[in-house]
Image (tube, rainbow, N blue to C red; front, side, top):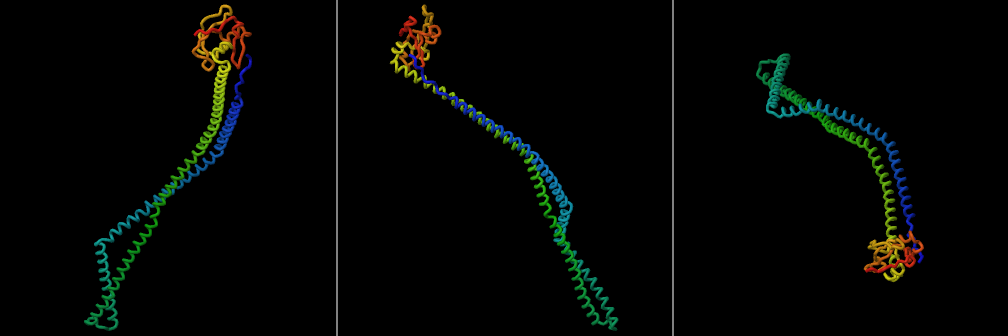
Length: 342
């Protein structure tokens, strides 16, 4: 009764491999964190300089936008308002009557001047200025000259008015783009300020993102180690359970059931269940128990009275043997009989 069971599998290499992988991951994570800090130290001053330049550009564009706006307000808006007023005034009956009156007055002045000139010319030539014919010719010539002069003067005034109005329109057109230019400058200033804010924040955001990457790498390594240790524990537990179940089944099959278990004196606690202390053997002072064998090795409905091998081994080691990793007791050496009680 002496052969021992096979030793359990050794999962130490697997645990060591998990630990080594975790250490590698931790080293990589620390390198990532160090690089993140180095990158931040390099980029932060550059991005700060860029942000300051963008803020300066924003101030310049804001000033330009205000200048465009003020120039349009102070110079071109009054001009446009005057054009509107002129256009409204030109399109009235009173203005047309005023132009007609000016034309009539110009005609009268021209007629008087023409008549006086004709009289002086005829008198110089010795003509009788009092004759009817002379008077008719003089009147016709004077009217023609007067009409021509009046038309010329009225046309000149009208042309001058039209040219002045056109020049005003041209001048107003020069300022029509100022409103858009001002809005564009304000928009450019806003964009420059917004971009400056983003650049000012980007160094810190990149640093935090890279720190998260490094922390994730370290955490991944720790998780690998935990997972490896968990697998080792599960494998060891499974191996132990499978080994114990296999050994119990082997013992039950080899020994031939409960009767053989009794004959062989198997008293290992691992083979028993429902153990109850019932007394003490007076000669050996060993505690007596009632129990039944587990169903894998015997009939669980049969109860026995006997001792426990681990307790016997403490006081009577020569009376204890071993089979397939389980302890047996030589009851005859103790003077005790293992009895079936139920």
